[in-house]
Image 1 (spheres, rainbow, N blue to C red):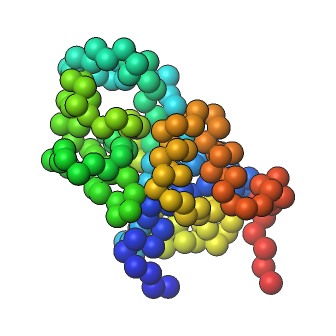
Image 2: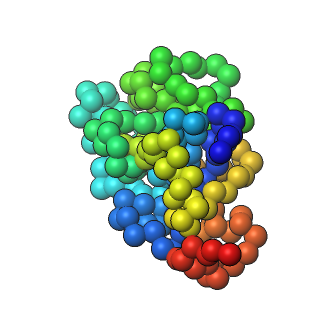
Length: 194
């Protein structure tokens, strides 16, 4: 199978009803990288008990912006759960020391400087903080899609922003599903073979 470096990047992966892995059952993942070497993304609908105020204390940053203090930190996936990933709107001005700008999509930053900007009110207006990420080795994601584990959903950047940043986390799965154009209750957990 051949595909461009951004084959499924900047799309959602939605876990299908038959997904049994507890890390991913009911998950919506924003895929930020998909190449012949594998794929990486962030689960965007699994808030944890940890909030930004507590996280910022742990990394010795002072966060005093009231609306952000109680914003949850999300479970981004089971890989490197001790590492932070910030998914945010792309902007022409601030550049951080370790960011991946997804063409036509969002930006994923792993460097502390984005959090330093957030702490003083200069960070991205809309962002999602996660711990960990979801990762697949070469060919693994394609196989899981073939086995009916995932459905990919290509959306406009504005639709993605609306789901990730403006929709309550408990409704993101249904909202992403609603863009498929059919009733998700008709989905089966079984893969079909002709």
